[in-house]
Image (tube, rainbow, N blue to C red; front, top):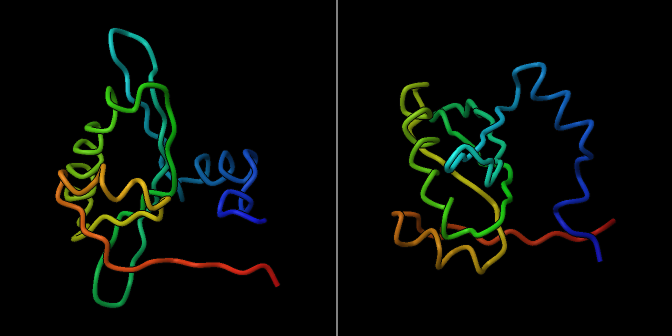
Length: 110
């Protein structure tokens, strides 16, 4: 079964970060990198959106609130919204942070 994770390889993400299309984020605690994330800005006809492409790290409870820094940056960049596509379990984690589920994405390999 294919998953969303099969759309990029590390080299694709690295090239997009180097070109400035994607932004790389790191959450640091006590001088230790505890998580990383990747974003990009999308300019839709009616709205500028910061899309959180992905993130990972150990001990999620320690780093999930670093998303506020991404949101602050996105506002400064003129974004009116942040969005992400994640597994359903993330909905309960992001709900206390003000996120609401607006759509469900399904995919099918062709």
